[in-house]
Image (spheres, helix red, strand yellow):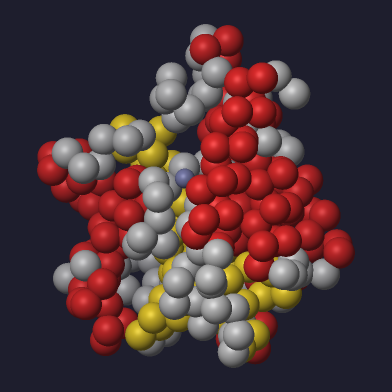
Length: 250
Ligand SMILES: [Zn+2]
């Protein structure tokens, strides 16, 4: 592993360790019986690879139970998120996302908002308009959202945009709850979990390895493994939030 990659990976690992310290993982009920009920699920990914890191096992579980899954990617890759050597290719990170979707059998939507610029009000409003346009006339059972307190601002703004669209009824879902998943910070109020068997876990790692553009700069596979160790089990963690309580989250 190159020195720079090692340094970046260790930097992220240390942040993860700090956040996982003192985390209370007790009393989490399984999400399996809820997932089985769903026929159509939308997953919001701020960036290509978040869907694998936060929901890779969950997507497999849903697909194994014949649920239709759609992943909506909010931002477009930028010079920041892929190595300069790859920048001349046509959207390599997007292609990787499509390869993972083929592997697991789900639909993808790309919104292509600019990465790291969602704090800009105009970009944020455009994101909302474009998401609403794409999801008009589509009814999902529920939505999986990135964590509202994640380290990455794109994750926080993507959460906020979907909540605002839900509250203004520009997106409609049939369930009374949504689910928050974790990527670079443990979800503090997690109340549901999905245990991953060896097959699911191995497939999740395999899916992550499709993202070669990302693995060039950080060892995300190691980060997934370490996060599972810190949690004490191979699992994915979610906070189930009632729609009626969403107003207090934005
Ligand atoms: Zn992300």
